[in-house]
Amino acid sequence: MIYRPLGNTGLSVSEIGLGCEGFLKKSKSEADRMFSLALESGVNCMDMYSPDPELHSLVGRVISENRSSFVLQAHFCTTWQDGQYKAVREMSSVRSSFEKMIGALGTGHVDVGMIHYVDSEKTWSQICEGGIMDYAIECKRKGIISHIGMSSHNPLVALEAVKSGLIEVLMFSVNPCYDMLAPDDDVEKLFQENSYSGTLNGVDPARRALYDACLESGVGITVMKVFGGGDLLSDNSPAGKAMTVPQCIHYALTRPAVSSVLVGAHSPEELRAALDYENSTDEEKDYTSAFAGFRKNMSWSGHCMYCGHCAPCPRGIDIASVMKFLNLAKAQQAVPETVREHYASLSSFASDCIGCGACQSRCPFGVDVISAMREAKEMFGH
Image (cartoon, rainbow, N blue to C red; front, top):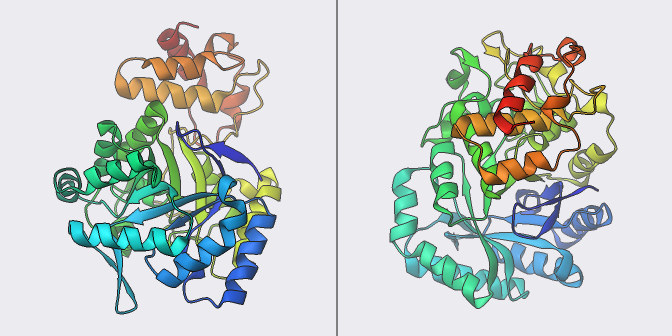
């Protein structure tokens, strides 16, 4: 298992993590098998959006022996009523449900307190002005949580939260189909067929800006919906072509600032398929081969997708990383100090480019890499 820093939190998380939906309504023995497989494979993180008290007790028991090394993110603003999950914003319900969850876990704290499902500017204002953020800050001060996070499907709202400096972790829906869509308050549009009927060209600018802002500010991204609720793995995919498990995971892990992909496996077999990503070949991970069969109205032409096909560079330049930092600086119309530091840590720079064109001949998306290296040299000074 490969581990990645979770932004600037100081936590290290497995790049394959667990979503909780696969554990809902499972028997103790079924859940134990799933957890045993995950822990034996090196998984050390999990998201719990569900307020199901039985799940909380189960998770608390399973991770108790690994608590110091296990990273748990759990959600404010969810409650359990009549055997069903419900999102809430009233402070009395937010406080009581979170306290019940902490009690059921038996761990005393969670690593990331995730403010749940913030998809509109109205909801974000309510979080900031209605006491919820204050409560999260209070929980952090008391040591009940270590870091504050937020879950969202809307890149504009998520970007506002990141820029506020109030959150340290973002749980966001990341896959190559969702990434092409413009922002919207209505999460259901991500799943609707007609959302993909128009011309879609590359990663939507708002989503690209969000990923870049997270990278710049040190906000770690944990990924949900990596398989689009399973749609991307079937011919019913919004792209009109099925992708594979390793292709979906690799796409998410190559986005800027992504730390962990939280897979919602519903069986040991599904979980094992996700965990097998760590042993997949480069060819099996290669999502560009799937892109070639996507609908004709979906194009990534001219856009760097950080896929790594440009490697190896004869001068040792990590072209994908240079492109990430260049795009971030261009979006800011300046070079933020954090980006300059990231760039300075590279072993080779854009100035080392000899213009041989080997990278361009391998790029599946027709990116003018040589020109980009010239831009980067000018932007960063070397």
